[in-house]
Amino acid sequence: MKKILLLIVQMLIVVACLVGCSKGGALLIWSVEKSVSDHWMLSYIKFNGYKERKITMSSEGEHTFTVEIVTDSGDLKLEIEDDNGTILFRGNKMPTNTFSVIADGGGNYIIRVEANAHKGSFDIKWE
Image (cartoon, rainbow, N blue to C red):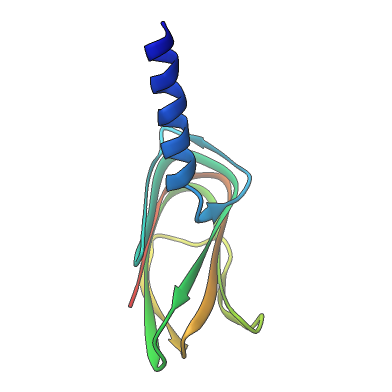
């Protein structure tokens, strides 16, 4: 019994470490999330609430966010903001679409998604 309890605690610690880069208050049903150094993907049957991720672009120059959104139903909002509070992109009621957003310079960026009964996915890559 102690081994099982120890294993559960270890798994919870690992999960907490893996999701430490994103934050938000969200209700997700049947979801799969991938969040790595240059990529954030979330697919779900239902998403209510918001999630955000802070990323750092270390090099100067032009950077590209490639965004793919799938909307089967509901509403999804997306916002990309730079260090200075400048909104690089803001979209409401996002339809199924693929597009790019250009950012100039290194620094921190915040990617924020907000959903209202959204069924679908988003996949955001940056370089």
